Image 1 (cartoon, rainbow over the protein chains, first blue to last red):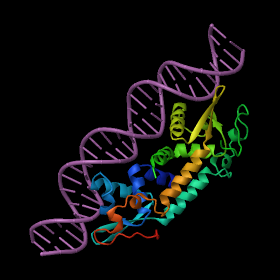
Image 2: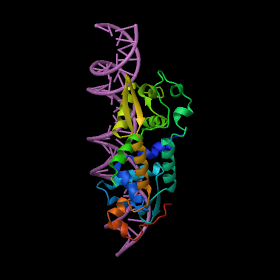
Image 3: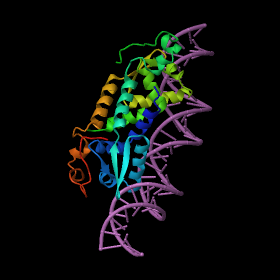
Length: 119
Length: 119
DNA sequence: TTATAATATAGACCATTATCTATGTAAGCG
DNA sequence: CGCTTACATAGATAATGGTCTATATTATAA
């Protein structure tokens, strides 16, 4: 799998303020000024965060009069969950096996364990 | 929900190299030297990344002789998926509603939409 | 004990980024 | 028009973080 898009989503989400914005938008669309009331930082800072979220494909913006309405993208929700499942599943799709690397088949001392147990 | 632990996981995952390490470990445990063969960076850099992953509760380390064996924590997989579901679900658990904030009930112009549609 | 191999730690360096203030733009209203 | 409101952009600053080299630690082997 190509994790490029998934990493970009993770980077955008890996900020407590942006995560809170996503949480707010999970209830429905909001305009910038409404989002801003939930935070202590300045308006340009919010503008910056919304740009990051848009670049990562997490939210879309729709201008209506003076207001910018932000909405969580359904594609983001699908792609992020799918990427997570693909990353954490031991279904043979990991880099290790797809690369047919020697290390994973038989290591230097036979101590490397390839199994289904994750504990 | 308290997203503190979830954010820490996201921060640890939001690096392409660490994401690849998680992908490698999703197939099973590996020692540091085996993980290192998949990357171009130095051994101290890997040591740093593994420490970040441990601090976030993503992997555990078990020393066996000279080797450090790293394993993906089952609790991480569960907690991360649960946190993701809780974040993206419009189930009333979002900050917006749990705070009973005025903005979300009736906004300045009635333009704020609280609904189930995410498009 | 001496040497070697696997890993960790310390500290420096550089890129990224989160934030700010100041200012620009665009839309609505008197 | 002039004023206000909502938002974006520019540029500066300070903190964070990924990487390196050098060195320390720990365990095994000769």
